[in-house]
Image (tube, rainbow, N blue to C red):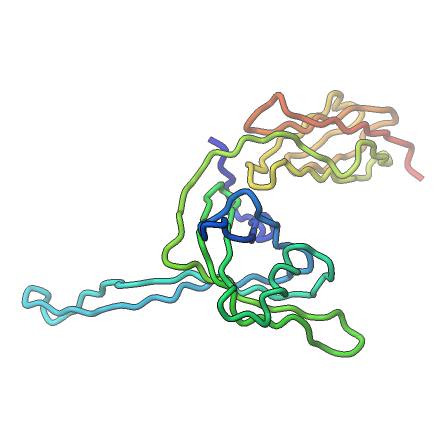
Length: 236
């Protein structure tokens, strides 16, 4: 199964917004990524509850959640021209046209999606010399669809296909698995440990002068990999 585990960074979560279909339904085909300039996303669940007390409860109470809504408050700096942010900005002066399609993909592959409403739009603001701010909230209409799908890795990218390191020094290979919601687990393997070794975190240590290839392979599918050519030079 393609499931990311461990303590995962927030940027691995994807948020997408777009229009509804002409019939007013959720539209999967025209979603746009909400990421450019966004620095903080604060999810919030607003719940209504009802308390009950029964004779067999020894005076204690039971709580039932009778309704709930899930919202996401976005904030950051406005990147003028970004399609997703312009889509939000266009709703500023509308009161009856703020419905949209909204989708959240968590790093473990769980998907939350459905119709939603945009509110609390602040399209600009801040100090004169600062980047313009933007804030808005997207709230699902009713309870969204909540599903978990296996996501298969399609590629692994590295920060550089070549690296140079001195004997006794270290350099780090940074790997990213695509798509972003696929498992990010990779293995690093040196084809010649006498020239350079590599740790499970991608830290390469130069052992002696020479060249060696480091393979970066996805755990989900060992056939998907990238190779980094490492040159080890004499210590200065």
